[in-house]
Length: 589
Image (cartoon, rainbow, N blue to C red; front, side, top):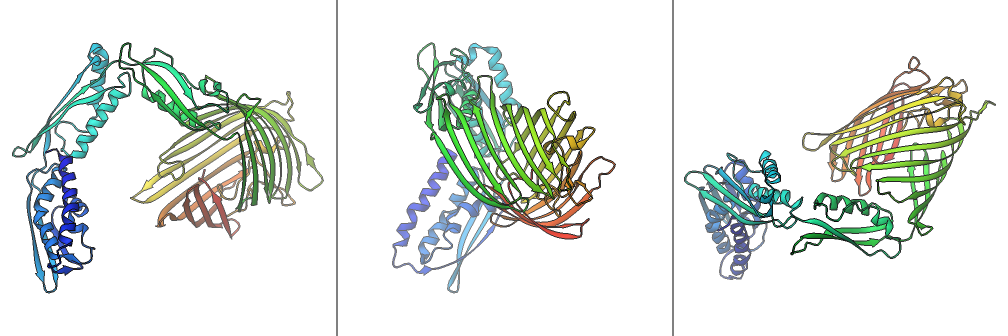
């Protein structure tokens, strides 16, 4: 009997027998009983999860006859369970004893030797054999790191994984109709070995057919068709369909998208592609409110229109009011081109009063972005005009026409709640004083974060940030291209952007150099709540010679909400000898 069928029969037997015994009114009833099991740790854990004698312990008014029947079935049940883990000759003893008014069940298990794989016979039939070079490369790939190799311990889960993995490799390219035609695990319990046989029929070699798009009514079909790079007649590749589906679902005009291949059963064995989409609403209005210790209370209004000029262009307008900063932004984004690039034009107005520095900024520009798996690359040409008032009677009016390149790589196990992985951002750009700019400068900037699991539940987070603006006179460089530090997401224990170039009147001006770092450890406390301890160090200054690191240490709490991490910290700024409270939402980066 196949191993999975044994487990199914085991589960069904428990379900069917229990009601029959429960209806026996003559059998004494009990509300609890003890169980002692003697077995190796991994075996004991498996049995505790599946045996009826464990599942029924909390059942009230359980008939003694029912418990007795479960105990009598236990050796058979244990044998069936252990066979899934490669134990085919276990010795099992189970008995029940009455101790006064209660009962005690004793189970002793000697699992015996685990079965090992002696031979794996993998064969391919069908059209794949018409191309020996591709077939041999495929077999070499399958044998390179198999889930179940000769000499390995045999388990039902590893055998299932081997079959599934092998079939998926064949299905992923060319042979979309591949199937398993023979699967056998021949066990020799006396020798503790198993011989495996797996035969797969590749089926015919499939090529892409025509592409049919369904569901486009509100938006032009062209915005979807421009994302399709499946040339009719090219070989079928499943990952290309998955990538296309992901790309479509990221479009603001698309709510959901399903990309599927319809396989022809007759030569020339084409695979027509069917794309079914559900369109997103034409307009979207968003209102939000929040609070941050960096910029105080926050209110935001967003409006998006997804089909400007009936071309699928997306217009977005956003107004943000915060206690220390206010901004208005409008942009026009164009659909992704066949070469994978996005383009947009934008205009932004901003006003802020931070550390006694009153700044008003207007900027507009164009950007070009491409996403390649987990890497984003953006090139931006921007004109910026700024009014900077320190309140001392001197008003700076820097402006710049800058070209900036940004590269971001995200490699995280989970975007909302990462436990392992990295984020890294690198920027480089500049402006020329001879071209609509008050000062020639070159700006380099980078920051990164590392997430690393500690033990079974803890998380270590490390962060580095650094930058430098190469210019002669920072007063003629807009604030966006200079640096300040301090606050949540920077150096905690200090006020928001309070680390920089300090003027005589106490104003904190932006500097030309920046370096900050942070280490943090988080540990679960209760459900979605974590505790945190951290230490931050860094500063922003006019030059590296005047850069002085400032240390902040503290503790905090993290709530992993459905929309991301929300954190509250109490930090001590060593330089100022003051405690400060910080509140933030999102990743530490």
